[in-house]
Image 1 (cartoon, rainbow, N blue to C red):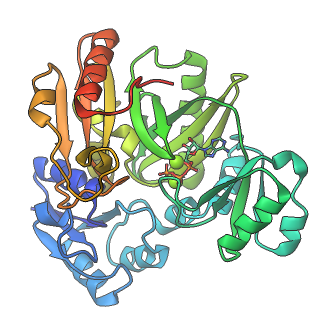
Image 2 (image 1 turned 90 degrees about the vertical axis):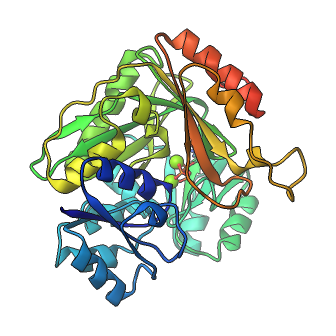
Length: 384
Ligand code: ATP
Ligand code: MG
Ligand code: MG
């Protein structure tokens, strides 16, 4: 049988491997960690650095096509692999998604509005920042995730100190916007340019980390959902993207929408599709990688996803003793689907799993989600 390869051994790679194996593929994972969530469930595990030429050659020898689950995989490694094997998404798309400066330029090129922002690469850029970008959020151009690498700044002095604290690396200052809510859209685009999408997802973040996703026909006004889908399709088309792409949006208090950022891979906000859709985002990833046909995914149930962070393993204030949350009490509720990533140690803020809740109508699903959240000790209410 054919083997599909993935760079990165985290939970996204693990769920990709599960989807690939269900469809008859063998999987090969490359990750520096000898005991990674994806490596543990794969047929082949290459335990080495992402830039190790020998390791990449071994992956290319094992796998018929290669994808990535890890946003910051070095683009040159993807280029290197692409000489030997089909690689999706391609190095050029991943390189743009890894750099907020290039990413924003791409959004603007595609006619999709971003938050007002300024690029800060030099002291002169810093001095030239317009006052109306404050208060704002200073984001490092590269390597941030889950709100890491971001600092809120209210004054020019705070901005200068914050940029200093980054070591003066390239950054983007974004105006702090009054958000009504956040949403995201996932598209899958094949080698032949065919594109399908999942319904627009409404997301709630806490402390810069995704906490809750809700997907059902009334999760947001149709106008905004349609705009988010169309914008995502334009962004993918503009990249000649191959694979699964997620784009995040802010809907502002005045009803307007701006794009936030994109992820060149399946996304935490798409995990609901594993239980509420006939084709999950991971099956879409397998299909695009293997050159299989894409059909429009159909959502068959309203869905709420609760992210399960390592905090759940610890009582208030006590970070020393990890206690397994009461899964049986949650699984006693109808329509709950528990996904745990097989991570051996819990840490605050670490993504350990997610709980999908499905049912016949959104009110019942929400009621179950509230109940599950209460059982787990998650903050309630689950909406803004
Ligand atoms: P991810 O894990 O999604 O990749 P990230 O570290 O790349 O996160 P962003 O998506 O840029 O971070 O921001 C994280 C969250 O911070 C957003 O989802 C939003 O809640 C808030 N946020 C970011 N930028 C702004 C802004 N300009 N105005 C208001 N809130 C913002
Ligand atoms: Mg990000
Ligand atoms: Mg984000």
